[in-house]
Amino acid sequence: MIQPPVAFSYIVKETVRLSFFIAGLLGALLTGAAMAGPPFVTDDPEPVESGHWEVYIASERAQGIEGVSGTAPHVEVNYGALPEMQLHVIAPLAYAGTVGGPWHSGFGDTELGMKYRFLDETDSHPQIGTFPLLELPTGNETPGLGGGHTQAFLPVWLQKSFGSWTTYGGGGYRLNPGIGNQNYWLVGWEVQRRLSTSFAAGIEFFRTTAVTPRGDPSFSFNVGTMLDLSEEHHILFSAGRDLSGPNRFTAYLAFQWTLGPQR
Image (cartoon, rainbow, N blue to C red; front, side):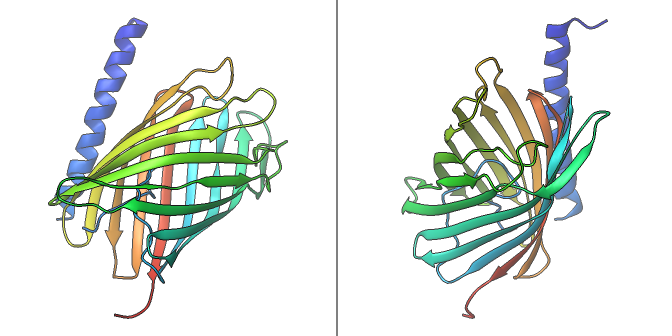
């Protein structure tokens, strides 16, 4: 039997190796436009262009030791309200279930946000911005469809491009009220490569501190891709897992429309 420390090291090494293999395989098959935010947890500071829209019809899933949860689907809308500023809303249909227990579905918590970029990218420094988010408790907390309390996330994000490569990341502090909860930090970083005019692939790693007083921090990764079907239509996908934490598998899939004034 493999001893626990050796087993963990082996799992980490093989998981990271598999993630790079998947990204490389996708790149070989589809020889892009840059991805930012969805399909990743790590976000970026770049807002939607003023007067333009992003609309996502998406679904996400997290499978853990005790059960599964996710959205099927959720609608995300981003609007460039002003130069350097984007408004944001997510309205989800959520589901949750436990191993051997009942399944529940219904409207989940509503997310509101405003992204603001306060420093543009140059050759010498990255672009920097913030994207405060507010989670409204519109979902039913009892069956696990919502958090039961208003939550807030206060981050700072950075991004820099180098030819066909783009990297972004940062993190923030989440206010997580409720009995048995505590506030926590989330930090992450993503690296991606534009593989063609219509395809990009990337990988992210992110860490979350304990969300309860007796909980443990988690460390996770996702591999993601974005395929441009046209200038307006895109498909986004990511999959990953916790390297340390409760989630054995996570996935995100979305169809995105980008709309705006004709140039």
